Length: 520
Image (cartoon, rainbow, N blue to C red; front, side, top):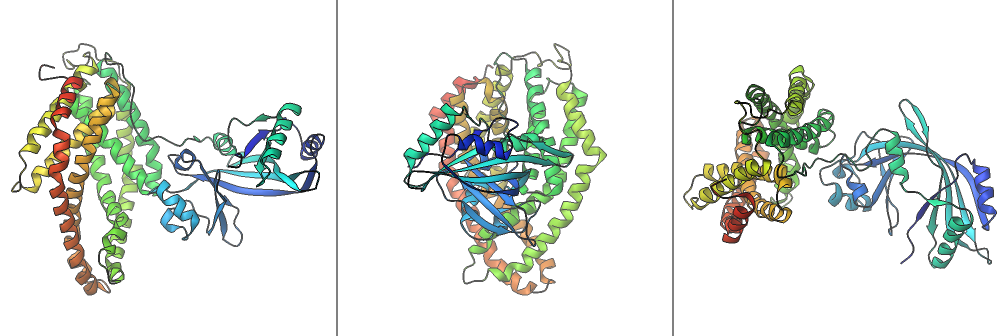
């Protein structure tokens, strides 16, 4: 396997000619001319490419077309021709190697511009005695281009191996390190440029798992969790308004639901009036964000929805797709107004204020504030788990859909408790309980989602009939509804197996031991 590429830092203040002279004092070089390179560095909001060892950049456009390059150690550079845009979703990219590599990494997330870099680049080759190129080098003097000006970044010497000359690569690296004193760059150019632009190279984390001392007072633990949830919500507002990708709205909604769960589960912990006010406002925000998220789900599942038709009948449903897209546009406008409103700003302020309020101590209105979080959260986890086991066992073939829906809601309640306050308990027990719960939630979610899809699509039939091509779409919709109903039935069939894994005797014993019995 060839050696990995290496980036070294050249001494500060060296211009191109001085840098070339320094290298030529120890290496036999073939130097090319200097050129200017202007590109935008890309990643998802949560840093998925960086985490996967990928780097994407978009070159400056020529006549409205730019080259998207995808770099990965040990693989050739993948390229695609695209039009510059404020975001790039994978399904919008042309088919080919770039799209195929990005789809499993990004899923619904978009590639977003993280930093713009303009560089002076000089390509070099290290030659052996036969005048053959054995190592490729490039000197790059980059500048981060910001709205407020330009920030010079460290000048880099990039080393790339040539196939069959691994030994020459190692010898050249030793010369540069030992004789010229060059040090390897501790950060990538991407990291340096994003930092200069005021961003976070690792991306913005949306998962909330807070390490907690089991003895932490419950009000203090609740405050820590609420602050973290508020941070996640605030970070996703702009992306949801701009509609950069569906995950901004999804993560905003999840943070709102989790905050509601904290306030619901920890009664007697936070100041009652402020808690009640915030619960009401969070409920309003969840209702505000719901319609667009439902439409996002419908459209995200569109390929799956139409693939089951077969016989090339997918195009017959295009009038339905167009109808859903128009509804989504209307809901997006409502959502943007709501998220920009004074009411939503007040909600975020109240959220922060409640999280940052003074500990309530042993005040009569907050009798559970000073209890250790291990006792408070552990008691709730154990209670909700027992309730789910009881309710799940009562579900039979004749149980109404509402019984499964109620169990799903209890599952979300338990999941939030485990994820938000699990840091106060044994990691392995928390992880195994969440794993078993996820399996159950998958079938319950599928069952409920199919029910919602069927109901919402049926509600569109009258409007669809009046659309151009609507009658044909209505005919094609019938089999789609049948497929959804069949998948809903299959999810119900799978429920028993998943529930048994969740409610098995060893799992019940582990929950009781970790989170407490009835006396807690």
